[in-house]
View 1: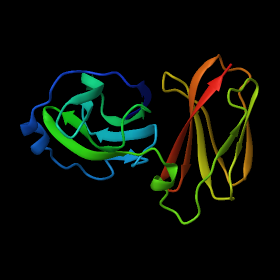
View 2: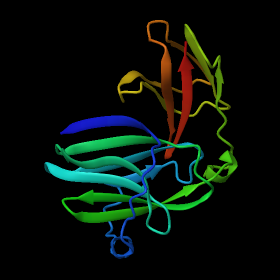
View 3: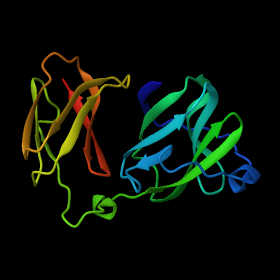
View 4: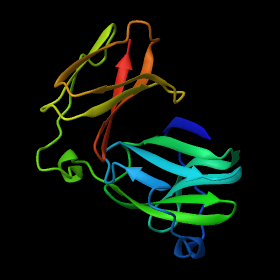
Length: 202
């Protein structure tokens, strides 16, 4: 089984996806095709699992069936679990569709864009993450409001996990002095909630 995480930035396409395909979207097992967080502000993680080597296409559509982004374009992927971190802060608020084609069978899930973090909180106490400094050079300090168990990952632009750690602490320090300059994603998983924050290392 292969596990892969890829960070994708927005690119546009004017290709029009047929309305008939949107209407005939199939359902896939909840654990095999997930989007978290959803609604999202500027980043969300699209997860899916395939059981055999399959030709896959993964796209984002507006409600009229226009393709806004193509994340995977008819690539043959090995069996396993895949995670694509979709980064987009230019979409207007509203409803979209994530379309997953596996060997020409189309699966779909609704994706909701919002500009307010308050609207995606599903726990009573607001999850607040304070990251300092950002941009950072040698260390990254991450602060939380409580001592819940969290999984923290630092991911580079190639989708590689550079740091993976678990913590119950309100404050953690990440050593980043050996990482090259560039854009990274700090992904924090708290129960069913995944929060992705962009980090700039100088």
